Image (cartoon, rainbow, N blue to C red):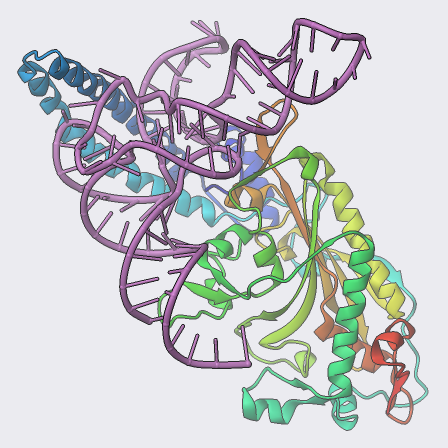
Length: 424
RNA sequence: GGAGAAAUACCCAAGCCCGGCUGAAGGGAUCGGUCUUGAAAACCGACAGGGCGUGCGAGCGCCGCGGGGGUUCGAAUCCCUCUUUCUCCGCCA
């Protein structure tokens, strides 16, 4: 299990260092290179001894069959025993260290990205203009509470902070969004997958969540980190083809899934994250593709356009941001966010992240494909929310609110709402 | 949750009791060929992958019979452990 291509580090360490610096990560490869060299040294020593031992063992077999004296052979083999076990221990130790180091290195950002964090994100597209209101706008918490469609208080009683109940029409609205998205993805020939919500540790490694973000998920099984609740269905979808070699003709694989997303999101509440903006559990429909390396840029555009199309159909004002290298998550090379406008706070909030991990996750999960010439190579993997429904409800409530506190349902959702056009 | 059984290559499946000539029989699928006007059938041939090390290279070496560990000069074969699957029982939407 490896992560960023070790070849890069060995052959162009400065390039890798520079790229990681754009993500704000400073690394020194001296120790790594030293370990790599030591590793090769040990392998060569161990393998030559093993070759000798294998050969002698084979001869013992032959001697026994021919009833010859095996004494001298045993004497010779005896001398090999001690050193080999010691060196095997050392090799195992060093390989563990190498892996530990590599697993903590984030993916390299694409070259065209700006360095730096959030402040360097660029808005590259805007859909519609800020909605104007000739009355004082209410925030989604007030709207939803007055309309009796979201119940925060009872959720706190039943579960705790950071949760809510979609009640009645609210549940219907949330579900309408999910169903609308599902139908749209079907139309585009994506395969619908309902994944387990309880995942094992390796799944988190492949996705790139672990080891770095182990504390951001909910663990089951008490103290030992064995099983966790998925923080997004990407984590499950990316593992479907772990340790597999896919047929060329099967690529690209296009999946989508719906799942609740469970996140610890350690940190304090800010006023802009009130209500359903950030909770321990939210709903999301997720798209995920496995592609040929040469096709991943095309797939990225496709998924971004799909996410935009969903937003367009909902008629919401939003923008698309090209994220700066430092704002991109650990496992990704490139991410564009779709951010929906929330009038109450005059802020754009992410409802979709479309990302290309290139071969980063594929390397962690040994997700490969067989080329026409019979050789194997790593796939590229991409994911994108399509979309995060729990953040769309606030946006719909706020952007579509009317003077009397009622809310218009986006037209495309009306059929999914049993004909309801307005919540009042 | 309890009791048993199993995991071998793309698929099926032998080998495991009795460790060494098993880098793993046999069949199917697949690919190439012969035959045929073409196809099918029949026949012939190929078909153990993947990782790692080394070499310009042909190649050579190491590890691979679910994962990990152990015993042994030597393990698919013996021991331990984990995972998964199946059967039966219990519980249950």
